[in-house]
Image (cartoon, rainbow, N blue to C red; front, side, top):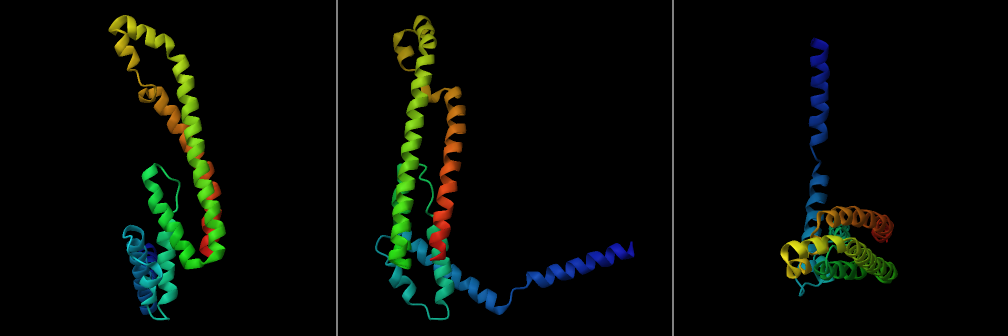
Length: 193
């Protein structure tokens, strides 16, 4: 029992040593957080200039500040789940171009093209699924019309059916995974510029 206890004590001491951050690490974390805040302000406040926001930091802090800015901007470049996501995505991409210059502009164009292709693919598959289910729903609509009337049959929304929801969830997840796999290397490349 004493050996187990001493092993535990050793492990606790190591954990305690690892848990302590050096002064430099604390300072670096503070600057990264300031960069994250500057990027968030840039994303959600249209009057904020990104270069102006980061230019106020001293030369020592600037690399860590830029790490924080880049982190937030890249996290906001993702597959658009709805049309409302586009303004933030576009602003993040514009921030990356502003931060990284013309080499980023080419990659950003590829990212925008990929995100638009994602939306088009989703739309195409959704319409195709809807059409297929509409075809199979004919007999169900006839039964509903006989029992509840033609008006009730016309109100059957294919996309509200559990069968559609389950299949759409599966398909949209697969499509998202495919496009995420294509987006990840582009984001990585942007992070390395």
